[in-house]
Amino acid sequence: MALVTPNVDPVDVLIDPRTGDTVAPGLVDRRISFTFDDVDPVWTPLAPEFSCAANSVSLLMPYIEPYFVKSVRAFVDDLEPELAAETKAYLKQELQHHVAHRAFNDQMAKHYSGVGRIERGMKATIDWLRTRRSDQFNLAFAASSETIAYSAARWAAERRVELFSGADPIAASLFLWHLGEEVEHKSAAFDVFTAVGGSRRHYVSSMILSMILLMMFVAAGTTTLLWHERRLFHPVAHVRLWRWAIPFAFEVLTNMVMSTFSGHHPTDFADPSFYELWLREYDPETGTLPVWNGR
Image (cartoon, one colour):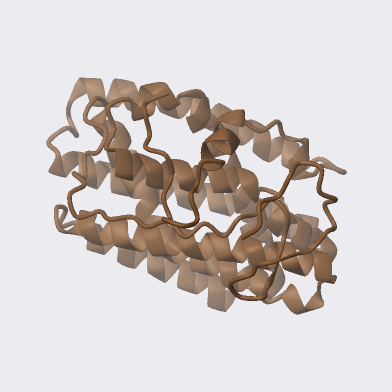
């Protein structure tokens, strides 16, 4: 894929030489080659509670990412060519996240017997949303959820040294790559939502529901994994989790409120520079990212 320089006009359309598809400037279809066979499920040994929480989020990805893709793809044919190109590039990134997290979760399931029950609950919930709610609501859910994902990425960037110090480089790369692309495509679903005249009421209600579901499933997953690691009743574990949870909630809730203001656009948020600089080192020939060095 051609590299894009910062002065490219945002309405320019590029052509992927491998497929002939149009792609949006700035959104790169990164095909990362991950091998998780030797990754310990507690991949942050200096902060094992973070592994448990992050792994719980990973459990949701193989269900929520395809839901986002289907919700947004339903409107692609109604978009102008430039926005359609950007949207297709966004969908490719989301599908790559789905594939990578599915492989990671399969490895994790070998160590934790309780994750299957949680995943079934996640799947049933997402299936209900997809089949029982309108296309407009599902699109709003995808667009508003990207604000939450972006907020999580910004929160993690500010604490990356604490959270990822001593981490397994493969697992760390998986999560940092995903978070980086959440920053990169933070506007994609919102632009589709706006272009098709999405309901503001759907946007607000779906955002609240998205946050509730995220908290519910992450709490269930984290509790299960902490139990398996014999840290559920460890005082240090709870101190760390609350020390992370409070600023995380402040970050997310602040951005959620801001995103409901009239005239708001995701580009109004200030992006952390770390992800952009790190993702620049992606090698499309080998499908690799730079090894996380703890900084």
